[in-house]
Image (cartoon, rainbow, N blue to C red; front, side, top):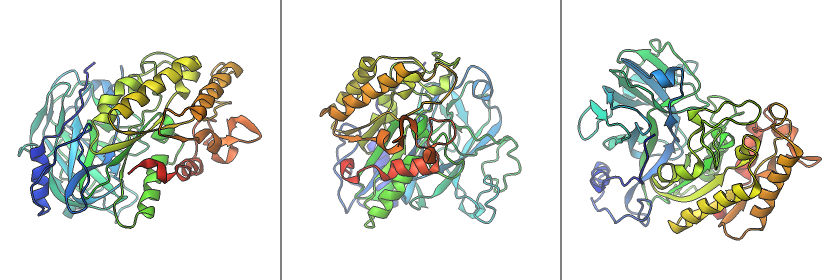
Length: 436
């Protein structure tokens, strides 16, 4: 498995973007996470959308990869601006991957029932250091050149990438809650989606981020979570994950447009202390797409994000139900993550673990595991180490049965919130804590 080091996007790319917007090409020195102090009169890059990526699984499409195929992927950005740049990742690949052509476009709002259609007039090619065809080295990432392409707040973009030769196992995000599309040949410039005959609702392939240009950007908020942040249980294609809904709150709260980006770096099934391939209780087999342990994700999924200033960590419930970890093991890793965030000068918020009685096969929930959850939450509520607490347990639990989700917020599997539950989580975040 390839390892990552913190990203530092070249300042030459930032200068080029400033020139696109007509601003002076002055680039300040960057801080620990590649950001500089915000000035209201200067154009800056801000993270607007991101996804945590993992290695392809041991079987299926993510393992065999793509070959002379195009992937059309829809992303819902948090904040907008007059220019964008796109990140592709081959971080977990086993070989170099050729990108034949890549484009960005807006959805075709005249055909809302077919999300694979794009607005033909909006299609723009993405280039990488001036080239439309490029190779991603094994374990490497690509940052596109700045593109003058106005992006609206709270809007959808469509990125289409053609892979002309076999990619081998993919680098991907396995729980998109969003329909994406695969078709034969180079379909990057094709407006109609009829050629995209494979239509999974699972995955973003090789796509890891979208940055936008903003004046006086207040940075970005990163959500480091599991399937609760990833939106399991929410409506597909509706962007009802709680980080999306928190972004909506921030946009409504800040009419001056000094709105932070919200970057959802959640991974369904992720654990603090275990690898995704480790099996769990209830005959859970484990998969690559659950990702490495959370502490191993920090360099890529937190410190490498553009403009990150605040991080919400909501992890640990999978360590309980899958791995029967002790409170001490869970608390120890949460404390270590917190120390690393604060050492980097980031605001570190932590969320309590939410109820799950009734989820899964016998043994997945037990009174002993519930005692572990309560012990972790008691520690978090009493700790003064973190910069703030989000008490998600109090938001979602049934007051009559605190070990269970409130029925009105239960998606049906007794662990993941539905749309109403996601809205309740977003509403419960005190905006004053975000330090943005």
